Image 1 (cartoon, one colour):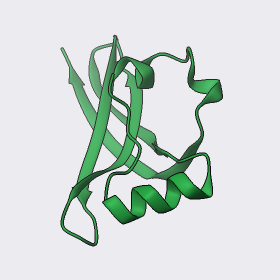
Image 2: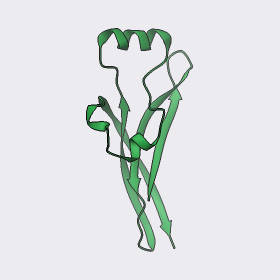
Image 3: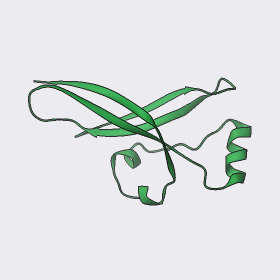
Image 4: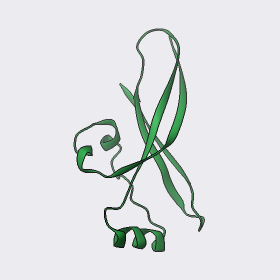
Length: 92
């Protein structure tokens, strides 16, 4: 099993935009586990799309969270690294 994290936040115009996506496998062994998730955000492929998304306030984002959890189809997606999120699990 995996946990998929989607982080949203306001942009310059006050619109909620995606700040990053990430996924990590949930550990099976009992105890306290800490995992650091590398976050990434999709990018536009052309300068015109970048300008249009900036002008309208609509940045590219994934519509299906399965894209983040699976590796299939991600090799053709342009993404940019966007920091890290640390998550703690308490497994019984």
